[in-house]
Amino acid sequence: MNERARLLLELADDELLVGWRDSEWTGIAPTLEEDVAFSSIAQNEIGHARAAYELAARELGTTADELAFDRAPGEYRSSPLVELRLVDWAHTIARRCLYEQADRARIEALMQSGDEVVAGLARKIDREEAYHRMHAELWAERLRGDPRFEQALAELRPYVDGDRRTRTDDFAALHDEMTSVRRTAPGAEW
Amino acid sequence: MTETDFLAYVQAGGQVEAGDWMPDEYRARLVKFVEMHANSELMGVLPEREWILRAPTLQRKLALTAKVQDEVGHAQLIYRVVEDLGKPRSQCLDDLLAGRAKFHNVFHYPTRSWGDVGVIAWLVDAAAIVSQKALLKCSYAPYARIMKKICWEESFHILHGRDVVLAMVTGTDEQRELVQEALDRWWGPLMQFHGTPIPRDDDQMYVWRIKSQGNEEARQQFLESYVPQVWELGLTLPDPKLRRGDDGVWEYTEPDWDELRTVVTGHGPRTLERLELRRRFLEQEAWVREAVA
Image 1: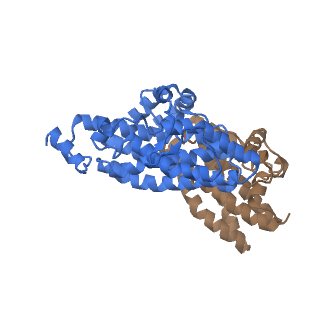
Image 2: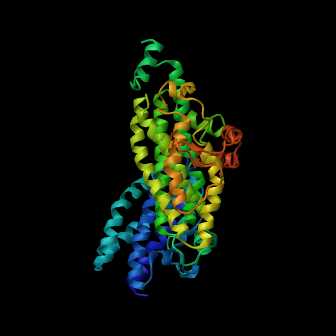
Image 3: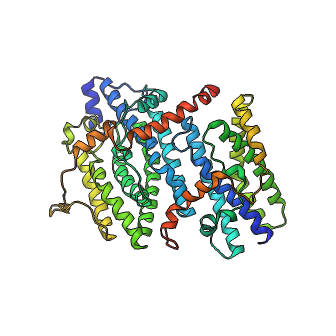
């Protein structure tokens, strides 16, 4: 796999999984405003994932859907940070903050890269991520000093640079559920 | 203005604004009606939430997240209308959790398969848009205004739902069966959706022109628009009496009104489970609301 495909898959896998993890707050976020915010963020992230998978698919001679759904767990290149199932607000916000920081560095590097196709995608993504960063920063300010939040940050920080070649325990259940409908009629149109 | 003048005014097509005088009875009925709508938008995302992950393509996943986002956005807008009428949103949400407030019958049922996701987005949203379009003429102007945005967005949900259904009925036998099986289960609740066929002049929501049509008119409109589409796809509906009469009026088996009453009073197959899910997370994260208050 070439470097472009590798970078795109890492980006796409992260965005797909974090998008889905954020959508876990659908209908149950602490406030209605956050229900709206989280469903909007989730939608953006999944949109970014699709755009990155489409470019990767061109490199690899496959389709975006096949990359997103039909790979074996060992073939995904997601960060362990986005695989974790964290349905409590302190951890969710801690992950959002850590993810947006790491994602910003990545997107900036991609924008600077000499690869115009990848840089173009990165610029497009960056426009929406700016709002996600504001959202994460706002929450970090509100929760700064709260022991629950600080502890969650400390707990999750080591995952940021975790090994992308192995999957966390939480991935199996996620992958199983994510592919459950698709597996019932392999190759079918949905 | 007396109550009689007010009634004559709204019945002649007049509209009122938030700051205008209105009879207590009108305000109370309006709050109850609009609050139930807001509750339904909010509770309506719960049957769909787990299917965001299970959606079998990226396009479907995106469409579903967009739909869910629209719905929570609608809830937020509609609760604001209720708030302007004097009932705080926090009280609405407390009443919802405590089972003191209602939400639409269709959101009390389980979502068993991807076929349900298509049938809900297509036909449940279609049934809803029939009611909502009639609210564009609501005598309470702020509610009528936001209904424009809501109807516009709902029309996309219907297209998404129809597309999901279409892909499945033109797919494998198993996919087609998923749609048929979902349709068989949802038909009862869909026929109950617009309520009992009380004459519109006995319906206080119509008398005050909160609604601009009666329940049966809404159901007839739904049947007229969607039954032919369902049949066109080669799907069947589980009602042997269902037919369009020579006079253009649809005939059907009497819907199960006992079931409707049972369900909307909080005894549906998934009512408690869904309220409990919200309650559990709102309790777990109560500290967050305190932290930002």
